[in-house]
Length: 280
Image (tube, rainbow, N blue to C red; front, side, top):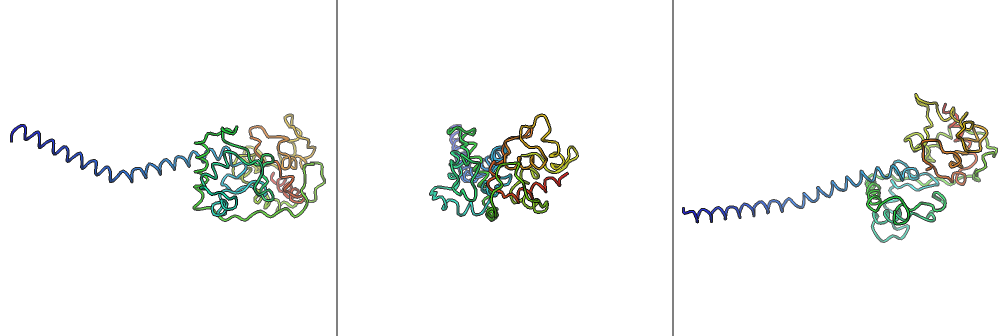
């Protein structure tokens, strides 16, 4: 074989080898891109979980369970199956979540069930509307919320109060409280989400480092940094429920909803306070 023939043969082999490699690569490209997309989605969910933990769980709960009679659940089967139809949204669920988080809500769409945090009912989170988050961060939060869809439980709407609201006057005379009813109420009202299950708010339960909320309430209102109006432990705890902005414990953010005075009855407040006082 002459040198020219050898070079031609090698060239043909290289062309065939290159074609084979490209063909195999092409066959695998779809699965490779699918894996890449899954990895990116997983990363987006992780980022969204961190952002949700910082910005959203104070109102919607650590696991998206919501706060009864204040803020709606997001980890809820009804949210994924019926919400778009309820509000007349013709786009995708992702776009709905992104839009709602971005612009917030001036008023609640369900004021009888979930009045929200006041005015606005939900603040705008997008930096385009004066909020603190970029669009990619909001989309990451949406990815995290949508990740609940396949396992979302069916949650029952909270019952409306069976009496007049307790209001915000901490000097009001409350009925006798029942600690056992208060313990149940702490769960249904979402208190345990921030004060027991997580550290969003001051811990209620006693630990090796400090006593429970019942003991701390006995002296909290006498401390120099206290900025509220309470004169008794009961008033201090009532104030922390119906007017949480009056005093925020050092080291915590003022994220507690401020409308419990409008959605909780005097008996419910008394029961919850009785339970809190029992946690020594």
